[in-house]
Amino acid sequence: MTAGQTAGAFWEGHYRRRRAWGGRANPLLIETAGELPPGTALDLGCGAGGDTIWLARRGWRVTAVDISATATAGVGAYARDRGLGGLVTAEPHDLARSFPAGTFDLVSAQYLHTPFPLDRARVLRKAAHALRPGGLLLVVDHGSTAPWSWDQDPDTHYPTPQEVAAGLDLDPGRWSVRRADMPGRRATGPGGRTAIVTDNVLLIRREDRP
Image: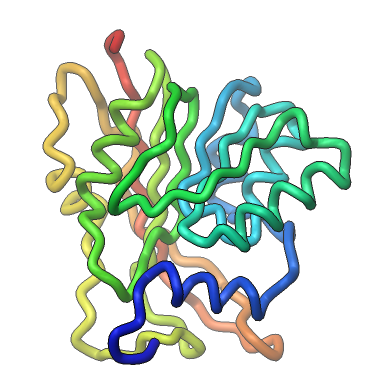
């Protein structure tokens, strides 16, 4: 990140350098959605599209959004090349300014972190309101710093799932917290380096009708 650089330019540069799409789905998405019947899903900050493709292969209709138009174009093309184009809609959105239309059975926000200003609580609140009755919002955040992370600030505070839930300020009569914990897992970074990292997991269910 350079002085004066915008969020859009930063993430565009990141995905233009990457140019590799698909890949592995996040394990906590697999754990949560693996037993669910296919429906409509929203992948917030889809990145290279591993989660989007995993869901589409299981019959979900997925709206994949990212601030980087390069990322969404790449994910969309990857889906079409594998016969999944009818199940994947990839849209560029700067979530600080716009949010995708529609309602969803599942909204996944996997590591929706950025070094730029973003009112994440507002975004996740919109996601909760975009759920259909019975729909799930899965928020997975970093709970520790991996040795290969770009952010090695020792003063970094990782909000707990309870803090994230409190920040959303959702009516408990309309949304319920189904999971709020901080499991550890072995992660693999560049060059095959491994480390135990913590994930902060929040799962919210919409109980009422919109």
